[in-house]
Image (cartoon, rainbow, N blue to C red):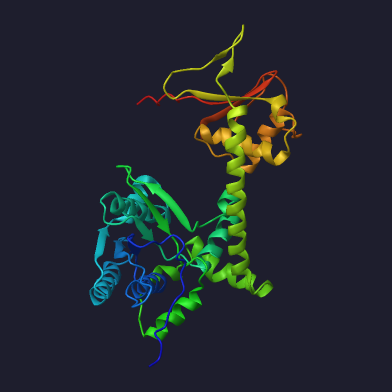
Length: 363
């Protein structure tokens, strides 16, 4: 009797007794993940020993007939394998318009809010998404095109720990991050298992689709293994970022000062709502290497709710006197206006970063 086709997936963070919920769209990747988990969970030997359900979001982006057909396909699949299914309906275009987000951003927000609700309600403690190595490569390229730092190049993380509003802990796992789409489709073909193709995946008005259908095929002519190379870069960036975060946790408490100094000693810290500031002594930054200086300034800005671009970080370094830029004066009294209302002032000894609550525009 021929052996049953199998699909390898990462089991490192799956344990007996876990309540797993597979996010399923009806596409090849998520169908394969659901069937692979189900097969491993019903194996006569070495069963996963987990509770298994599925979750589907009806996005309302494509024509109703197509979205309804996807939902019907997922429902039939879950009935066939006796897998409980959680369904969420949303109007993504309306949400995107209201929140001034792209359709991709709004859809992601809705999906992950749904995942959190499943964990908060106790239906699951772990959500599995079917991101593949191909998805990882595409995401790294998108991050590069947008000028990401190393934390961005880490791209899709294999595990994310989340807390729900009721503080019920949970996690999101990506067990197929080392699996290629070609392997997934071969697995489904071997099972004679159909899947649904999302018509929007061919629409090159979406940047990701342009990367998938135009940029990556070009890059493969230079390096046939570019997908694996980009996935490797994500893993390296993730490890580098973890190392840096540990270092920042150690040094930031020694460097960041609240408020600003006052005559006679001590520091003045505003208690007004919406007004907060941090300062760093320039001489304490001077002996540090350039990479750590950049990290410290960006971490300080992030504590005030702002993410600095490469250019803004360079301007801050120039304000401190560590870089020379024609547009920035490294002198006492100089200041910078940065993104998201963040400001930086130079005093004789310190750089002060602060954000002030902006007054509402009169009606």
